Image 1 (cartoon, rainbow, N blue to C red):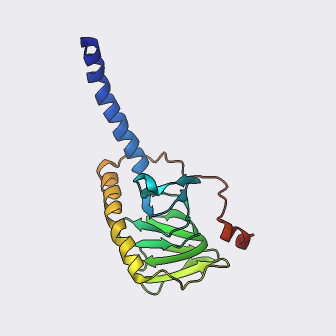
Image 2: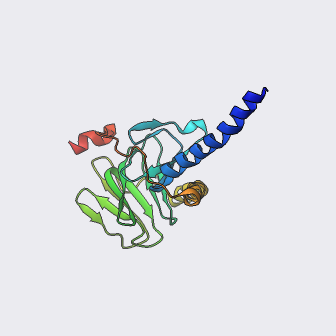
Image 3: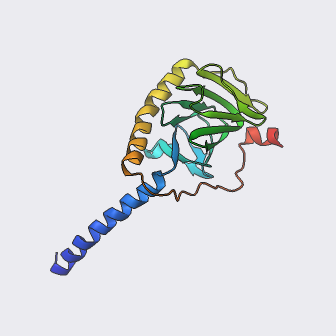
Length: 199
């Protein structure tokens, strides 16, 4: 490598590293949760293919998660989690300092660390859990009982814990900027099973 090439590399590498750190810091600043699934789903209106080696994605305030053919698990920083059944559509927000999940259509199964760890919402208002574990549904064709068992929840939550710890650890280590994530996905289209029920 020539002297000019080395000088350029030596000057550009630190700049590139700083830009990378700032970008990660800015995108992790308002992360509320991590979503994990074994099948394709939509996040912020974009298709997310989980077969590319990245099954977990950060969820920011205002993000809409549209679950595909396999359930998706949403893990919050305190260890609370929510399982979104197949075909479920939900929005993640922040209410003050408390994470909030609003069910737009489908079925939610929750496992909370405290009764007020995550504010749960349905179309007709807040869902007030009386126990740390439970479920609720909205729309036709989404029953609260089904094939999803406690064993499934334990497996998904266990796998999610590692991914969530990594995401939140990175965010905590480099946090300090404002979020610039595109959290407004515009007019999201509901899943086929929910679209007819919401009209």
